[in-house]
Image (cartoon, rainbow, N blue to C red):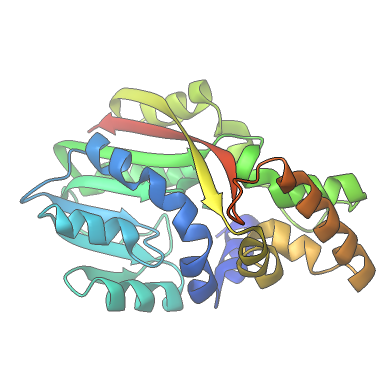
Length: 266
């Protein structure tokens, strides 16, 4: 396990509840395109990587798939098992997977591959678990982050909050563009392709602040909560000012989100 992987384990430990109420609503937009790309339907044997609260697994079950799901965090796995009792949910830390070769018709991961320290090694494992002709589908954020992914980070930068040396950056700072992401998947899978996913995400700015940054969800939250109260207040003021231009008139803001969907065939 790399230092980045160890950091990620600590980052998400105990965050299942706030993640389900907050950030998982943002990533849910990609579930339909993700499952479509993997051609998940009745009778498909599917593996959901980094299942979190189980939103992808639940939609796959609704489509008639036979679903297995894994998450590295025990609380996340327990949340998914509660939310999707039809799925076989297990704890597993990528790249290690507790499945035999050629087990699945489809393997999907919704904003998971950007949370592993060695994505190339993980893709070899995903290739191993797929049957010949099986399909892989993965989403990641466009990097460097912009729009919805960057609202708190941009506010911190405007206030002058430095990024600490001990908070590692994801390897997907390298892969989070269409060409590099396609090349990464294409090294193990044929017919590799990448599509852009862009949408506007509507949310309550105060709720997002509390269930995201102030709940230590993601690295932005880690950095923010190291600051003193005055600095945090200045970041919040900047955040509110930035989001005012995205106000929808009903107390919400609608901010663009930018992601990539990669898919390939074993």
